[in-house]
Length: 138
Image (cartoon, rainbow, N blue to C red; front, side, top):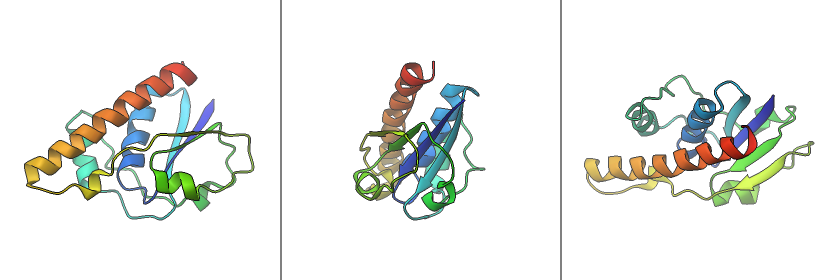
């Protein structure tokens, strides 16, 4: 079974959303983890935007990448430029992939505009995860 780590700066939004979709699309064919260079807690708006698409990530926790140093990952996916630049070296042959998604936590405007920005990023991550699973997990 493939092991996937999704890495972001704070493990609060983008990596949490990606973990939810990777698990959903892999449907038990991969072990999926997410972590951050730092831990900021799971963003309530990330939980809400996933709930709006029928997935529950309310049980997710915000984890530091150091917690997973002993796991031999097959893939390490960074979902923001900061995490890519600061990604630790894993003692494995993990294939590293990168896609810089906008940070919805930095969204500004009315509540409706912020919700729309979260939904837009969610859809980008959803598409990426679906394509990743189709290409690498099957």
